[in-house]
Length: 218
Image (cartoon, rainbow, N blue to C red; front, side, top):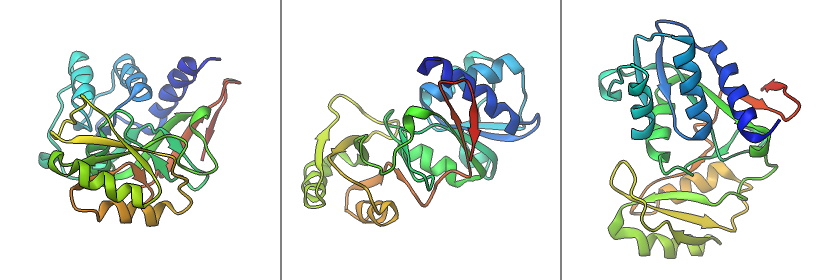
């Protein structure tokens, strides 16, 4: 089973955590796109549905769903999203699609965060995937210098503007052995909106698809 097939498999498995009438949050990314397709095929209906990215909103609207603003909804029953990396303690790196801030906010509003991944996203220590940091444009150079002091090599993701109108720095060569500490340290740099470490906002349930065709729940 290739990676695309694993993504489709785990997306369908996530439907077991979804019920008609729920208030649902939907993340972003290629695995979430498979989940959105599975929602449409299942014809599930929701009291409210919110998303963490404009792209997910467009995909849901194309299937006939009405997407609400999070400010008008409040608490979510379930939030479904993927990740770029995850360690054994369920701390993650997210933000490869530049939606990390909205993803972190939406996850914080959910009673349950269900993370859907394939086995390639599992790592013993976070940092193989460059850590995205969303920054206010005027602070890009300053924040980059501060990130160098932390041992990273920040690179501006040129041409990318987040849904919030900000820029992304991808920090390479970090070995994130203390994700809680580093998440807080980076977030305290002036000009940082948030960073892609999801340690304090880790997943409640992780569904992992394997090439063997099995899905593990943890």
